[in-house]
Length: 135
Image (cartoon, rainbow, N blue to C red; front, side, top):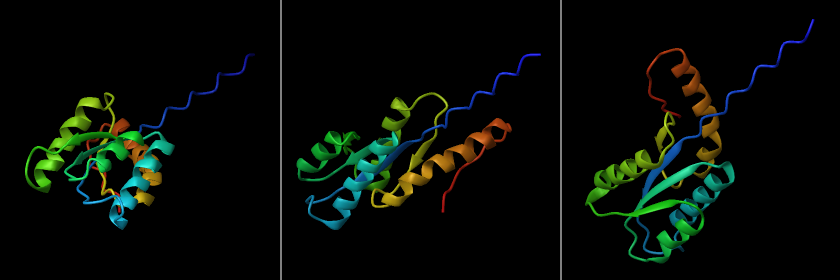
């Protein structure tokens, strides 16, 4: 007699991205790409955590102003910086969300995370653990 209620769409899981940066100046092309990545994350509603070792305080200040969570690197080397960024991302990520590393210069990757997360969520609903490695 009555129509069945439409199934509710599941919200797309958003990742919490983490990365590392160290730029002498905001004028370098790599720094400009990292800024564009943070801006793209803000447009897509994706949280990004940056462990930064830049000597110029303007670099992390700009990332924060654009919406990134920035932690000052206290360890040495890229491995230490990645662990610091991952630890902070794990602290702030919503339960059940995906934590994902992304190189800060890969601006175009930001728009692809929704698809990666959808595939990962479908995989998880099937009861299978997994690792997503977008190419």
